[in-house]
Length: 199
Image (tube, rainbow, N blue to C red):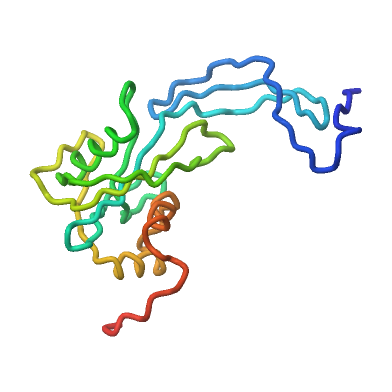
């Protein structure tokens, strides 16, 4: 029978799980699958757990001089739906997350920004992903040319005034959790906006 190393530990004492070894799984393009063999410190039992080794991500809250939010509409394969989001993507190997934010804004929208502020990072899904998502605020954004989309992208650029952006969160047009997380660092999303007079 497995030992119970936490029998004498205070209730609720959570500790890191020692990793015994890792073995690689398939390379799934956007992330590398890894299987870790770990020991549960509460029970002493050895268990295998899935980790998706994933590059860091960025997203960009880009505001024009007129305080309009630069958004993108695109088809998402997971939900099989067209979503309304903010620009974002993966941090390439050897690239800093600020560089990635500038690049993604330009590639997806054709916009550049004069002023940048770091809004911090979050762990997108620490249950299985080992990466971070970095939020950036881009101010005085303006269109500087064409988009530079890769073969897997088909993106329409739209601008929303900030009240419309807040409304889009409340009515579900903006539903991507990581987008809402970034917007919450810039907009007050606590109070439902007044109803649209045209509705």
